[in-house]
Length: 393
Image 1 (cartoon, rainbow, N blue to C red):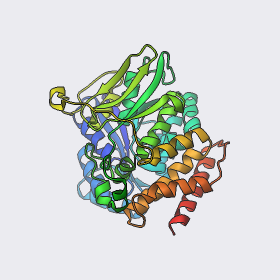
Image 2: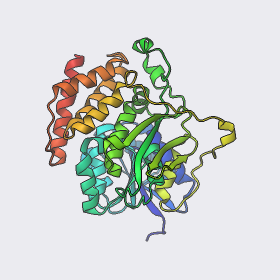
Image 3: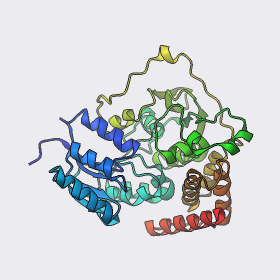
Image 4: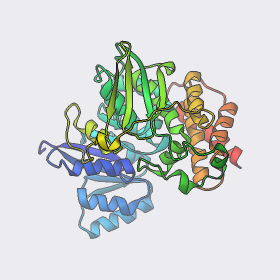
């Protein structure tokens, strides 16, 4: 028998967004309970989460990882059912037992489970921008077809969502002039460009404001992350590329803004803490405490803004080009970037070679305009990854 609490599934529970989600849930255990947790390979972290939250199910990537997790949980008398593999992940994502799903899986791997949630007609809290970048039209079409609720978790898109006139209707843009996506500029905003050739992975993941995973931290350093967010904003809010503007804001206090035709600009502000958008999505349309420290404007003192330098950050320009090209271009952009970022983290290529590799892959892979299903998208994704790997080799 239900006790009235919402059952929440967290896909990618051991990453930074997953951990923050569980932190918010732990503050409101009278309202929420954890139904299922998933992680690819971080068995020790997932085990600790299962011991604390006692979910009905946990999913890992491989049979070997599942065997370890099962053995360790049974030793602690934790009854959580342990599953593994793609099919189990999709089954848990779409389970009728949960009320809402947080998708915090990084990269293209989050596309299929996100769509599984949507096709189950559930509330999806989406922290995986790559899903929308890759499948845009098909993804939004599925949201409408299956009556799902889509709530953005990226701090920028959550801010825009809060600043729109009728956020319940994502594409309702009456009186909106443009969307202003803010960006911190990352750790190399004012570094001499010639020094960027010598950036190490350790330097690239040391973000000055946000605590994030390794991949998204590198994306922030190259500002490809902001380019991906431009594409995500286009699909989330139904606004054309020319009405989406990127603004550098080093303090990361204003998370994004909406400009209206009458000259007004609405901004959403707060400390750089992902628990704020997570709490907003969990409780929507209500509000609840997130655990974040309240913003002290007097302590912040000054807010700065500047236009991005596309020569320093060519990833943004590449993303605009991909959005305008349409079809498979955004999926190719994303695939090449994932390969390039991993190669940089593995010290196979230099920092400045990331955007070079993405550009070369986009030039070589022909754009397919008609993507009719998830299979065709994943096929183009695989093709782009192969080409990008070929350039590295």
